Amino acid sequence: MSLVAGSYERFIWGFKLKPLAHNSDETLTLTPIFSYPSHLSQIKTVAISGPVVASGGTDDTIHLYNLTASTSLGSLHDHSASITSLSFYTPPNLNFPRNLISAAADGSVCIYDADSFVHLKTISAHRKDVNDLALHPSGKLALTVGRDECLAMMNLVRGRRSFYCRLGREASLVKFNLSGDKFFMAMEEKVSLHEAEDARLLFEFENQKRILCIEPGENGLLYTGGEDRNITAWDTNSGKVAYCIEDAHNSRVKGIVVLTKSDDASSGDDPYLVASASSDGVIRVWDVRMASKEKSNPLAEAKTKSRLTCLAGSSLKKCKDLPPWKGLFIQIAIIVTE
Image (tube, rainbow, N blue to C red; front, side):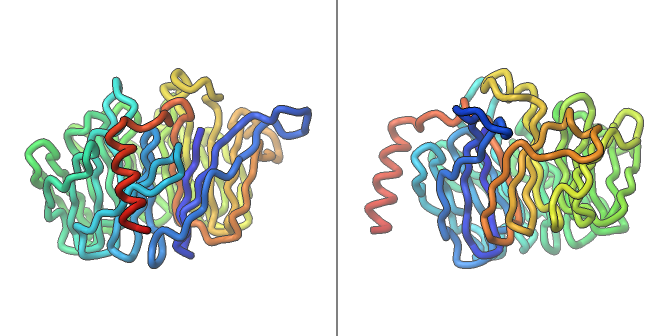
């Protein structure tokens, strides 16, 4: 499992989760892969698919990286505002992404061909900032929520907005579940669960404090983190809390990554691992089976000494070498930057 985090101080951090070779109280360790001041200002979002990483910042730029070689692949400059959300689409039978979808503070959504990172289309999604973007598992559509208090649906095949409705309140986060038949929206301290087909409300989960990150898991679980410093697992079948890791961090939780069984089937990693990042600069990895204990201890921990803003993860086995042309792209990028 590899983890990538962005920070307020414009650094991007890469870690690899490895088992310890010697006897120790800890069974895993987060080994640093790289740290790099990639942007001119704050990094707001990161995405990862196999060996490819993307980061977006308030400098209106998307940067691309080869995770296995720890090298830059260049940058994209098609937005004219801060990048607020990034998502890769990777077909089930491929180890490399087919598309990169980005959203920005000017209300736009861009579609890229991830084979050569060619800009295909820009869609006007919202009248104001796009707060978050959720890509459907099919790769054919995406949902966005924005500061205009609206929900929008993008038809990624035709490259246009196909649905737009007013919510009445501003949603900060949106996410599909693993199967894509339901989606979640976060508004301050509440998360709502909806049917994907008709947006019908199924459940509402109310947290103690504002929710800053959400991530779906296996068996109908939804993980949330936020200003309460906890990692809470909600049972979307019953609408109740399944378990909670209290005081997971000393500051607010800004990102969560869940290792699913599909990842586990290809990587051999433990499917019960959840990683979290906090604005205190610490990344921690948890075994959620231990969450029923009074005080859960992390399996691994890394301190970046920076204010982390986002977190993304990928299974280790998918991080293979890039195809030959991508190696050429890396060489060209190095020559240009030097």
